Each structure stands twice: as structure tokens, then as C-alpha cells.
Length: 254
Length: 248
Image (cartoon, rainbow over all chains, first blue to last red; front, side, top):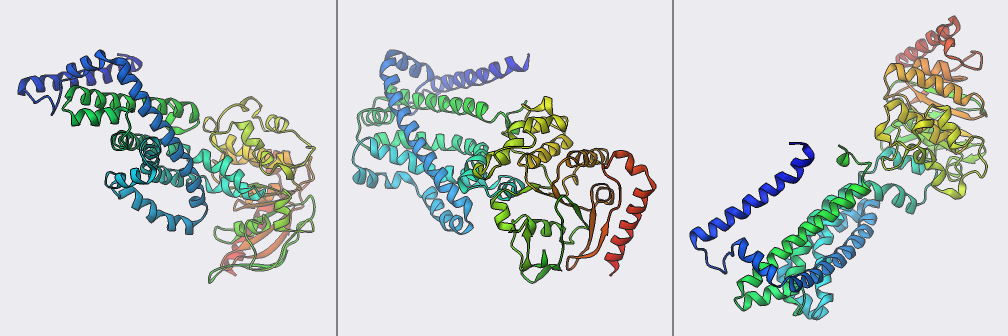
């Protein structure tokens, strides 16, 4: 098998084998519907109302995209300041860690009380849960800029924004992409759960949580599958962006 | 520079040093590792402030000279930006702090790249180049801003012996038509002898200049020079000065 063909065939074989094992397990042990649905039932549910799931997935995708974009911008701004001063870095680190380790599901009710129902609370949660990781990625990446190159910039009295734009930000891109992958998973969980908690009517989380409350196992599992597909699509977009932006980086060379 | 010294905490990196470099002259700081030659170069570049003494670069303080882009700096590693092509890397110092760039250039970046044999590699990325080629881009990058002063910090230290020899011949050729003042840091006696008009021999703990030796070799400096008796005498002289400095 050629390497190109293997890269397509191998993952497919893995996923099909996993689904077959899942299907067999549910049928063989007669697992209760609400605990686990067989993949065939999930596919049937999705095929039954494709527009419904598609439009709700797009709502969740929008929450993810906007929330992550806000988070990325904030983390680049905060990270740039942190990377430029050891004192600020050491003062900010514990705060970021605090945000990172505090279980966000515990304070989401307070956020909804503060920002109200709907989109503002959801976007806040996606951005707030992802920005500490992204900031660590930005700081680490910016500090990895070649010290000799920094001297070179200093030797012609480069302005701070030039050092940021021409040196630190491009140097940070590889680590930003790595942490974006992590943030995508975190953000998707935050979006799904927040949609369910922010008393909205749209989004995979909103219909999933309602379905769970009404014992609609098919709907619940169809939203879970849709959310997983959304995550895969997000990762694929990140990989494509990475390939085009980081052609120069060692990770992207054959 | 007059009575320039540098202390890091309790460590005396440089004892008070007096050194004069004339316009168009190439002066090499030659010495073993840890003798403070790189520190001295960084002081001239305005990248570090002297603890005592005064440095004047064309009548300006080192800091002013840096602001006005009077100094072309060649660091030890090529320090190319991996996301920029060869040409974009060569232009880097022109692009940064653009306001202080000269409006007319004696040689364009393209000309310089051709001159060092990289004309066909303009669109290549640094990782596609050998170490010697990368450092040639580093030289072009420094020459490109047309600065009256070039400061070079052991630019060929990481290269193999053959490439290193080629590079000093190339640098000699590049420098010859320009009236650039060069301060070159090295621990290679051959580089010091081939490139310099004068060699300041340094010794460590604390760093100081032990001898200032004029290199009376004819210009232009061509590769054949290295096979002459005159060159041999100079290198012998420099080697003796180095070991005397160490014993002192």
C-alpha cells in the first residue's frame, strides 16, 4: 500500500472497526437505550432529521468560532505582555492557573446570572475556559524566539511592535497551533454545556440537554455524535491552516 | 573608547580598555574564550551599557549610533528567520525601523546576494541552505543597510574548516571596495591575520587588551596571501602574543 493510500485507508479501518465493536457490544449485552445507543440508531436518527441537526450544529460551530477567536486575541495580547516582562509573567501565571484548574461547570450558573441567558454567557464560557491554555502557548512560543535574532532586532533599534509582529508572533505560531487543538476540545465542551445551561433554544447543547431531561435517547446521542463531528471538522480546519501558515516549520516538512 | 570597563555583579568582565578604530579600518579582537571580546563588541553595538568609561561611534554615543542604524551586526549564529525567504531575510534590517534606513544604497540586496553566490537562492527558505550559505545571508543582511560600521561576533565559528576559509576570503572580497569600518571578534589566528589592519590581542580575567599589533599585509587581500612568508610571520607573531597574554 502506498503511504498516501494508507493515510486514508488506515483511519477508516480503525473507525469502522470501532463502530462494529460498539454495535456488537450494545446488541450482545442488550445495553439500555439511554446508557448507550448503537451507532446504527444514531445514524438513523441523524438521517431522519438532517436539517435539524445541521442547523443546530452550525449554531454551536458559531459559538465555538467566535468564542475561540475572542480567546485567541485576548491570549495573544496578554501573552505578548507576559513575554516582555518577567515580573508580569510571574504575577499573571498563578491567576491563569487558578482559572485553568477551577471547574467551570461549578460557576457557570453565576455566569448566566451575571451575563443573562443566551449567547453572551455561552461566548464568555468558551473564551474564558480556553484562554489560559492559549496564553501559556503564546508565552512559551514567544519566548522561544531565537535570542540572536532578538539581539539583531535590538542592534537596529527595532520598535517593540516590530519585534512582536516580525519576530515573536511568527515564532509563537507553532505552539499556538498546538494549544489551539487542546483549546478546541475544551471550548467544544464549554459550548455544549453552556448552551444547555444558558436556557437558549438553539445549539447542540440546548437540544441535547432538553432531550436528556425528556428521556429522548436518540436525540441526545445524535447531538453527541454531531458535537464529535464538529470537533473533527475543527481539527481538520486547524490542520489545513497550519499546513499553509507553517510551511517553513520543521513539523510540516516531509 | 576610553577607559571602558564592564562588571557583571561582582565579576570584572572587562578591565578599563582604551581602543581607537579609525574610519575604514578593520580591527580584530583576538582572544581565547571568556576574555570579554564579545562583551566589548556588545558595548560598541549599544546592546549593553559600559560600567565606566565612554564609547564614541562616529562622534555619537553607542546608543545613538544604534538608533540611527549606524551599525551592521553579524551575530555568531546566522539567526535567520525560518519563515522568511533568503531575500526577505537579507532585507530584514532594512525593513525593521524603516525610518532610519538609508534612502539610497550603494549595493542592492539583489546585487549583494549575487555577489555572495546566492542569486539563485533568493526564494529558498533557510532550512534549505547549508551552514555556510546561511551565514552568507547573515553577511548580506548586515552589509545591506549600508552602515558605516560592521560588528561581527565570531560569525564563522560554527562552520567547518573548509567553509570557514572560504568565508573569510569572501568577507575580504566584499569589504574591500567599501570604506566600511569593521570590528571583528574571533579566536582564529588565520581570520585575524587575513582580514585585519590591526589586531587587539585580549586575555581573560579580567578581559583586557594586552597587545595592539598592526598587520602590514598588502591590500587587496587575496586567498594566495595565506601561502606567503609575510602571512606566516604575522600568524606566528599573533600566536606568540596570545600565549604571552595568557601567561601574564
